[in-house]
Amino acid sequence: MAVKDPSERIGYLIWQLSQAYAQRLERVLRPLGLTQAQFSALVRLSRDGAMSSAELARRCGVTAQSMGAGLRSLVERGLVERRPHPTHGKIIEMCVTPAGEALALRGETALEPCEQETLEPFLPQEREQVRTHLRRMLGALNAAALGPDDGDQHGGT
Image (cartoon, rainbow, N blue to C red; front, side, top):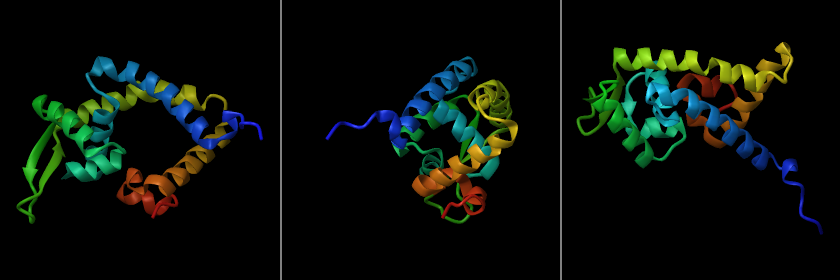
C-alpha cells in the first residue's frame, strides 16, 4: 500500500492554507502591534461584548494560557479592561475599550487585501459558498469560534 499524496487529505490542505494565510496576517498586523490572537480577541470582544478570558480563548481557538499572555499586553496598552462580572463575583470579564475597538477596525481594514487575495481564485458568486463551507467545517470542530450568533446560523451547535 502506497502512502497517499498529502494534498488528498483535507487536514493537510487546511494546515497549508492556514500557514500561508497566517504569514500574511502576521505581516499586516505587526505594524499595528498585534498578534493574530490579540486581533481575534479585540474583534470578538468588540462583536460579542464582555466575556471571561477562558470563553474568549475558546472563541479565538487558542489555549487559555496563550490568551492570558496576549490579554496582558492588551490591558497594558489600554485596549482591553478587566472588570468584575456583574453577577458572579469570582469571574473577571474582559471588555474592549474604545481604543481597542478602533484598533480592531484598523486591523480589519488592513487585512482586507489578504482576504481578497485568498478569494481571488473564486468567481464572485463562489466566494460566499467558500465562506459557508468553511463555517460549517469550523462549526463541526470548534463551534465556539463562530460566536454566539453565528453558530446557530451556519451549522454550529
